[in-house]
Image 1 (cartoon, helix red, strand yellow):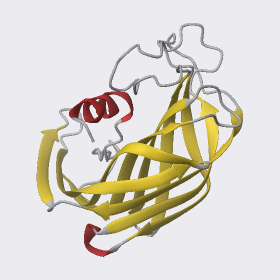
Image 2: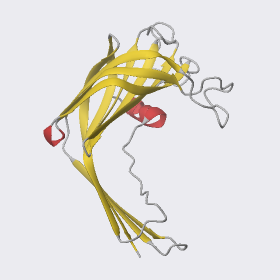
Image 3: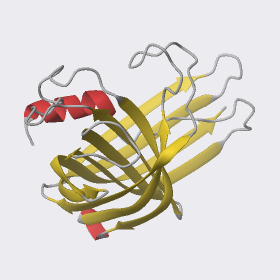
Image 4: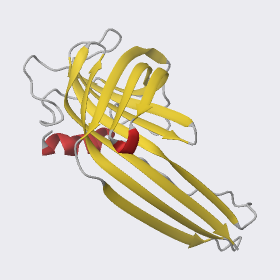
Length: 225
């Protein structure tokens, strides 16, 4: 995948795993909380028309997480109406004009499978499509306070991930003291990631210009007086 698409994908719809410290101010220290799990994130472009949505070029992203016996899968979709033969609007900004839609993909009936040792993953199923800025007059830069609209329909999406790189590890530590309660908070996280090759379809349209990652994460939060 080209550097331009990597940059555009990150700017538009990057879906990194974000884990933040969240401890009630009234918690009675000392406390400890730990969490660990697996993740898969993928991006791709589909060229063609979808039954329920405008446009003929669609950039889709999916973020899947598996932790503490739970699964969470979500996505986003951005669409353009392009002339035949137009370049990918993620590479040549403005070549297709403004996007004709920006949507939230909410898992309706989705299967998630994670391979061992960050080797592979699959995400398949049906997502409900919701307009991010329904009724907002200044799309794609809506006024503050705009709310998501009602469901517009659904799409079938499939992504298959296969690891293609070595594992990289990132460790994060953060701490602070609440002057009002006197409690001290310490947050530690370890993220391990691998780049992944992604194949898949949006409805019956093959995804191209794809990019993906596979990963694991462990976090630990401590609170003390």
